[in-house]
Image (cartoon, rainbow, N blue to C red; front, side):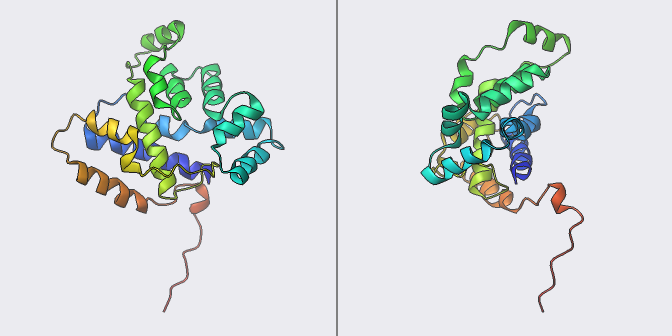
Length: 212
């Protein structure tokens, strides 16, 4: 389900940063985990309407965010940012959630001065929101491509993960020059395919019957 999708996205973001030697901020996993929190909020606020939004996306084969914007005047990324900002979340985290569907938008994003000062006083690191937004976009795409969980978005971008602009941007930003492109692609398209079910529904379930 959605939580499996989000958990896997968070893990993939962390693994991308680790493998490429990118400077971490501590927000990598949280950004992947919470990137689709807006879908949960829409579902909570509009329990009878939101399923129809998902269905319309499916029937018309168009991105979910387009239907959300048509119906609600904003998409799940935008309402996710509003919800996080309203609950005193790290302002960089809120910014990344807002831009995970459009990472380039993070390049010109200005974190609110008041929120930024509060964040600095709490000892929070400055975060490269452009890089982290690309990482979440890349992880989100890969997890969908591998069929890990269900994002609620039935429209699938046909671009291969390794051809995605965000994936290539991340690799070009690497600090570990010893990593080869082929090894990077093989690791994520093969190893991540075997990520287990991390949702609570997967725990305590009886093992599958043995085939003799």
